[in-house]
Structures are given as structure tokens and as C-alpha cells.
Image (cartoon, rainbow, N blue to C red; front, top):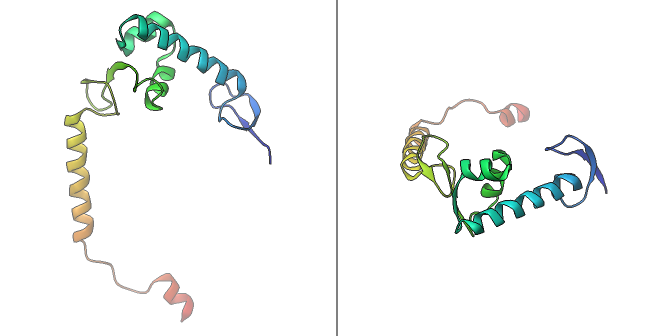
Amino acid sequence: MQTIVNCPDCGRMFTKYYSDKCPDCVQLEEAQFNIIREYLRQRGGKAKLEEIVEDTGVKEKYVMRMVRNRRLSSEFAIEYKCESCPEMITEGRHCKKCNDKLAATLGGVAEKLVAQPEKTGPRVHDKLRG
């Protein structure tokens, strides 16, 4: 069954077949990917995010989408800021220090949840039976 949806990039309606984006935006993203790939090849495979955006004219959100979708990260080393601090990284969303900090925080929360006694009292399905 064909589904009609709005393109998340341009907002136009299109019939969704294989992509979440309309054919025009898919074509535009592929062209932008080729521009970035050629730029990185000319620079020895390394560049900072700001340099790519400034020199190619491709918007930062599109470059980061390609990095997060791993279209660029396996072949090239693109430096960008950690989402939690100004540290420069080449993969993932957070630097090692911030990842460790998040893991410790989440580990502490998990321990507290496990340590809490289970609330007793009638449950919904008990009320329905009785």
C-alpha cells in the first residue's frame, strides 16, 4: 500500500516508497554527499566540521546527518564538537570523558531503582478479576 507523507526536509507531500524523503531531497542529499566526499579526498580525508560547511556550502545539519548515519565516518575523519562539552571528536555523540560521566550517572540511577522496594497493593488486573 502506498503511503503519502510529508518530506521532513522540505515539507512537500510525496508517495513514500523507499525513503523518508521526497525524491528531490534524496537527489540533493546525494549531490551534497558527493561534494563533501570530493572535498575530503582533496584534503587527505581529514577536516573539521566548520571547514566543511564553510568551504562546501553544505549546511551543518546535513553534514552531521551523514556522519551520524555513518555515510562519511568510515572513510574519513571529520572533527566536530561533543554534544556535552567543547571537546573535538571524530565519532559518536560524546567524548570519552562525557560518555564515562553519563554511564556513571545512569549506573547510579539504575542502582537506586533496583534498590527501591516494590510497591505493594492491588494491581489493575487484580481489581478487574475481583
